[in-house]
Image 1: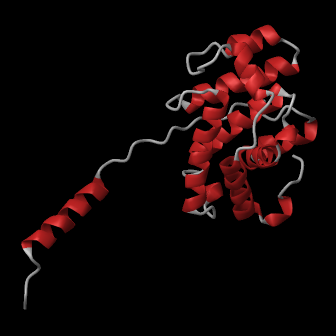
Image 2 (image 1 turned 135 degrees about the vertical axis):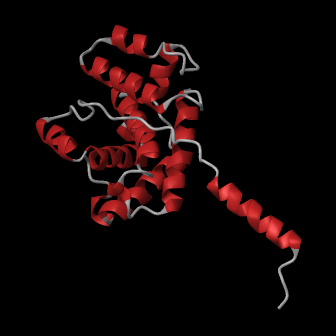
Image 3 (image 1 turned 60 degrees about the vertical axis):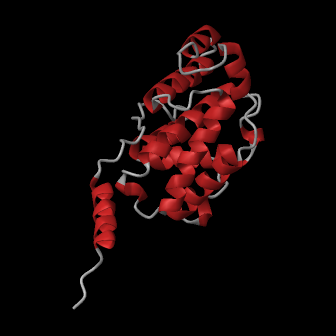
Length: 197
């Protein structure tokens, strides 16, 4: 019986060793209470299924820029929730039926949305989530000073006023639309696509 060539054994050994290397941790965040403070029903559903409600919001908002245009509070929340989901979905068993390709799309969407807003690519997701939800809550309370203060965090590449302008005028980001729609369909089925959360 012929034995495998030493070169083949070396290559196989290298592949096995590479597969055993620890992978870098995902850039993840926790979602605080109050992320769905837009009404008692949404708040109730969000308390039961934060991840599902977050997915409903981002799929709806990123499907059409008109849904956040002129509303930096909603823009800030949509960006925060997408950033959160991109890190949350690969490890949360609620998303077991979401395809690996869709999980990769969500990470690409996070990168594209960060670029559109002016958020540093390597920013910790928790900082992104915390500051943008602070903006969301501050603007809902008509406290623009607090909103601008949240946007002074060093993860933002632009002055607060310019970041607010971008949040109020998010462009159509194709990968964000595709990724959130794919994830929504795979988790819930097509019936919920385009339904206002």
